[in-house]
Image 1: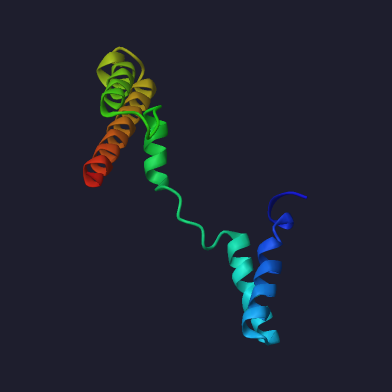
Image 2: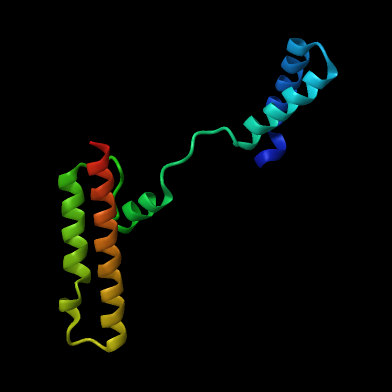
Length: 119
């Protein structure tokens, strides 16, 4: 079994606990519903902001990197994808470089904003 088909423990334990606490079949239903919420991940803590994860992926770094490593990754990528480096290229390549540079700048700004807000 894989995925959510093997996740039934919360429903069973919730149902038994609900029945034991309320001593009524309605407790079985409430417990099973709460157990299902746990099994389905509804009560799990929210994952990190997906936009922030995408920003780290754009900069090819991780949240554990310090600010110096993040700055180095930013400078490395900007030196590689800066539009001024492809001045003699075709319009298509220049456009791609501009889009990539904009994405790198936006990712760096988002990460730095989040780090300043976390202080």
